[in-house]
Image (cartoon, rainbow, N blue to C red; front, side, top):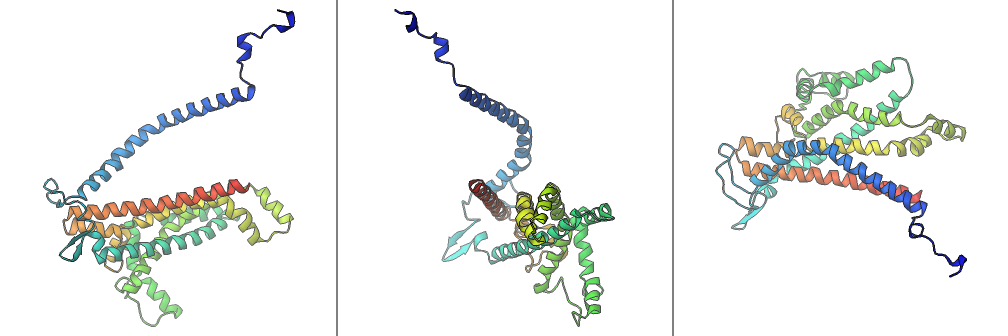
Length: 331
């Protein structure tokens, strides 16, 4: 064998290229980080399952029984009868109850109106607080006051303000000349839901404003300076710079508010005594379980509430992911 035909040592033949080695180290680092993240999150997940998961499983279990509230240990399995059942040409169960569907309509209407108004006024307040002016800290502290007041106190306060005889709302509208006679905001079915929406918007606009303000303060000021130099108007700067950059925070705020609005109970129960004109899906579940002592039917209604809230939250997350993937594809 000649001197030039010597073979390379085995170790030299299997040395991976630098790029593959770097990718392997990166993948190993990501796996270690993922394991560390799961270890850190595990206690919180266990606590969450104990606090929320176990009651949810019990509620799901009781929704298939005819258990009563006073004797929950005495029950018989009835399958899906609490949800929907047919007997002698008639329908029974939560899904066959007209009051349930009225509660669903009330809840969706309340959610759409209140969250839309909160987003609009929250955006205005966030844009205002993002500007530098004298007394900015005082304004930010004052805006937090409605959010800090407990919901029960808010409901009682607005109940007095909406009183048809000596409420400040009717007095103000009479002085301005918008109405001629006092309005029964709480007793009138066509006005009671609007009273609930107004009270909810007053209380939760600060939450939306603070979420959007935090996103606004993360936008570099250089982008606005460059847009001004290019001659962009205020609306163009808002539409092309502000809105796209705060969209992730806005979607998170909307998810929280929509889920909270769909589960509304205390504000409606205290302000309007859970009347049929304003009853929500959570109020319906409470009425079946507590007022009528039908634990099985109330549990079925609670499971439907959970499914509705989880489904709408999943839709928001899917829309956010779809828009994010579309943005990355365009880039």
